[in-house]
Length: 349
Image (cartoon, rainbow, N blue to C red):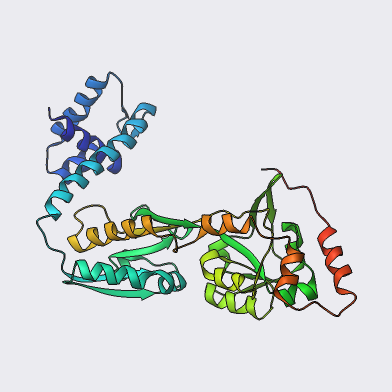
C-alpha cells in the first residue's frame, strides 16, 4: 500500500480517535483505513494503536511515530505549496495584527519593502495590546509574544528574541536608593504589564542561579510605551524592552539596573491560522518577515545591548556622570546603604 497514504490515515485516526470517523473524513471505507494502519504496523514490526471495542489509544511507539509523521507530512505539504505558490501572484488585502509598540518601532520599513516587491498586496495593519483570536477576528497573520499564544490550531514561526531591561530615572534612584539585587525590587513601585503577560513573579538569573521576585506595589498598564512614560516621570522601577529604552539610557534619562542579573528573553513570533493551503500573499509575507528579522539588529537589540551594558561603569559612577553632583550631604550614605542592604542568597530552581 502507499506508505505516505498509510501515514496520513494513521495520523487522521489518531486525531479523530476512530477508524470510522477517519475513514469518513478521508472518503475511504472503514476496512481500507484499518488495512492502512495494519500495513504500517506490519512494516514497523510494532503496534501503534491499542484497540478495544469502545476506544483507541496510542501505544508509546505510536506516540513517537505520530509526532514524526506529522512533521514529515507538514514538510511535504510545505514543499508542494511552495512549488504551487510560485505560479500564483500574491494579490489582495493582507490583514495583519501586532502589538502596538513593536509595530510602531518595526513594521513600517517591513511593509514598505514588502509592498515594493508585491505591489498588488494591500496591507491592512491593526495594532492592539491584547490577545487576539486570529481566526475569529479574520486576521491573516499576527505578530505575537510566545506566552500570549495558547492555541493548538495556530502555527507560529520565530522572528526574533530580545532582552528586557530593569530601569529607573536618576532622580528616582537618588530619592529612593539603588536596588542591587532583584529582592530589593519589592521595596519599589513596579511599573508593569498585566499579569497575563508576566505572571505573578519576575524570574532573574544571576551569578548564583535563579531568583524569583513577587512585586507587591504594582502600577499596571497594558502598553509598554505608557510604562516608559511612567518610568521617565520617576514613578517607580520598570522592566521594559531594551529596544524601547536604549536611547533613554544612552542620554541618561534612564539608568539600567541589576546588570549582573538577566530576565528571560522575549520571543516574538509570526502566527497564522493554518499551515494548509496558505494564499500566496500570506506565505510571501511570512517569508519576507523572517528574512527581514534575520538581518535586523534593531528589532529587539537584546544581545547587542547586553554586550554593551556589560562594559558600563558601576551604577554610582554612571549616575554621577549623567547629572550634576548632588549637594545633599545625606545622598551618598543613603546610596551606600541601598547598595549594601539585604543581598539575599538566590532561591533554588
